[in-house]
Image (tube, rainbow, N blue to C red):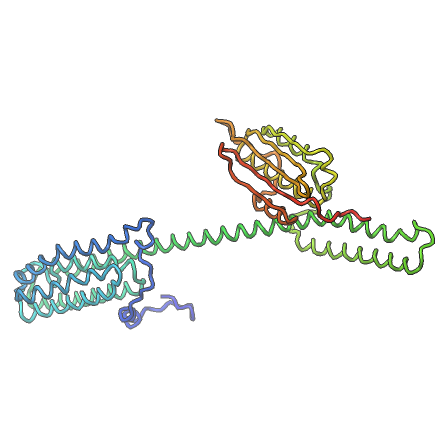
Length: 433
């Protein structure tokens, strides 16, 4: 036993090993209670009833005929030895106390009032079977310390009565056999219980890991969106700063108060840009380099669809005439990323499927639809030649949420898949007056 307080190995004391016998743990989940099949939960009770039905008459006959006990006393002892098996599936430690004390009483009564004409001492054959049947639920429910204590108590009592029987020259000593079988059943049951506990903990850890993975994916996608929006907003803030700083030189006869106001506007814009860059430095990981290229929008959808076509996915694009100029830049970036991720999913999960991308205006809303047909039969999976964000529907939802839009995704009855988004067109314009 290793004590965490000292880190030194110490031999267990008898008191520490016997302490669990005084307090049933009751904290361990039974193995069959974790089963996916509800009917298995009643199997221990059925087995206990079957064991009692077969052991009770045999035990009465053995105690009365082989050990010379009175028939009434033999019947009472047999009931006390077998009836606690009904308690074993749910409370095995109290059942062990009942059966163990009854076994000790039986040994004592045989020594004082009976005789031994059986080849088995100190354990009658029926008592051995009932005791081993009790050991299995005990091992499945109780802690390792309790099992060690039970085994030591069994071994000690068996050896004591075996020695007394040897003094009386009673042959057929089965104490070592019972000690070995008891230990084997306890080890087997304990191993099964610990395996079930390990599987449960592993399943719980996998669920926790999945939740953490989803959370990390969400945070990474939000950081990516923030970096992209930085480029969008930084451009317009730079324009504001330049226009404010150059206004006194471009506009003749500007009053001194207006010059001071333009100077303050330019300074505020530059400070805002500096704060945004510092924030972006926190969001950007060490592996993420600065994005130098302009952020894409609706105007780049045709090139994106063409790239997917080269990957083996026949795709068609339909955009209302003049719509690209009406879409705010932040919305256009979200549209591009949603289409990019949807097409990447088609390439990965439905290679060769015909796909339609449509973008249209519906009053104050922008309607985006990406629909793919079922993939052709016997089509080998293709590597995606268009790079998505790698976050799938999580990224789509975040981008739609960014602009207060709506997203609808799901499979179609014919085996295809649909991604539909409604985004607002009436966002405040990012251009400055």
